[in-house]
Length: 123
Image (tube, rainbow, N blue to C red):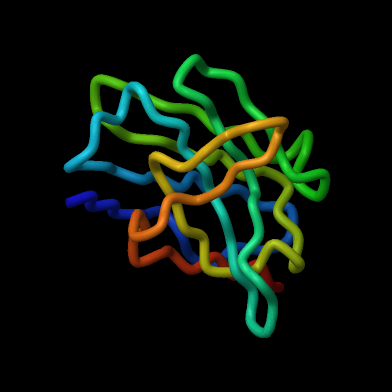
């Protein structure tokens, strides 16, 4: 059974930074793609960033140049460094492990979700 625990969210002012973490267990982390997705109130969940098992990355256009995804295989943990945060980044952020990453798009694995971590960007 896959277990994912996200952390690192919080309240930050516009222009600030946060670093999200997602610790995974119950899955062979090193051979799987990992995605960060977010869901704002009243909106569909959307992909923010993805990193393949080989380390290649892709980002939503809205976060390119501001967010960086990385992974630590030894710790089975993926990170999302978020800089220059904007109010429109406000959402619950989820990680997902083991989905399909093809042609720059990440298709989440069903049942492979954590509880999410709230990010609120507001002055």
